[in-house]
Image (cartoon, rainbow, N blue to C red; front, side, top):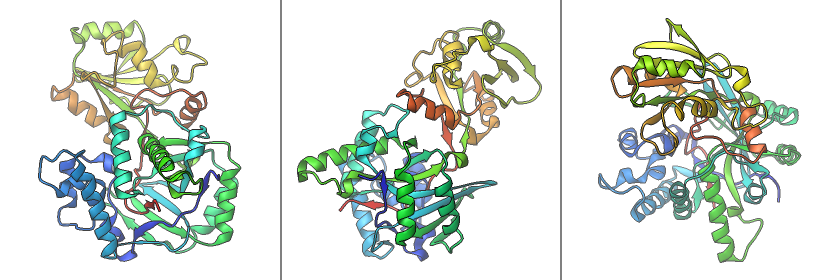
Length: 412
């Protein structure tokens, strides 16, 4: 089975593309989605967040929600808003956010190769979130949320992509957050064969974001395989993915805020911190400029923290991550927060919100202190995945985000 293959995508007809495209299902809560979709009958949020079309207070995991999503998808197909391509294609997807540009390949990726760890993971999944995606895929009979994959950049792929993006796109639109989304359809046999062969020659793809979607696709494939007797070429044996080269990806910092100082005064807390790190007061907000450097905001003051090199594990790819070091050196031993997945005393703030958001949450009394981190790198992510390990929660924040609704994968 090939690592990736083309597919007949279900996508908006051009005149409806701007109406359809929506933020990813997991970046908006129900009320935000309801407001965003108000007066927009063709917004993909009616498919990805269908509880917005049911009475307020409806459980988003109720059977009626998944049924409503399937009904809305069928309606948009029947009304000619969404149309399926007549032949298997690849698609090129470019995201532009400010000065940052990244161009990836939309394809379907092999569930079997995911199972063999050729498509590698770096996060644990939660059973409840997996269950939700399984039910959504099964009800819609389609995969609508792409898995965000990356690979070590490849000159052959770059050359093909450069040729194709010189042609007119199928869509070119700018979303409400000012991110530009451009899509090209790749339908000719020569370029399809070239892209398939180039990816087949790769050892590994890596999941950047979408662990629950890929795990759910594998579970749906297992269910349908047992029901249908198994067919390695069946559409359910592949999952929807957008694949970007590592040298174009952008990871932002993923910062931490804590509700209290574990019973200490600010002065006592800083004394404990100084036992672990070099502490330097700063008159300006501290945005770390290198690994093993942190910003600390407490009592309306910023401090730059640096861990001594001798305290950094040299070979463990997980333990040497800055998110791991902050936890093992300060958050757990000093603040007494041992389980960041479940402890309500800690919260996480994506770097897209900036250091001002950290200051705001501390200054208004909601939080007692904030930590700014240096972004995790893709090399670090790949090293963890290659070692078969998992990263701590909230280690990476990718920007820009993929849109929902541009291309979906129908399960025949």
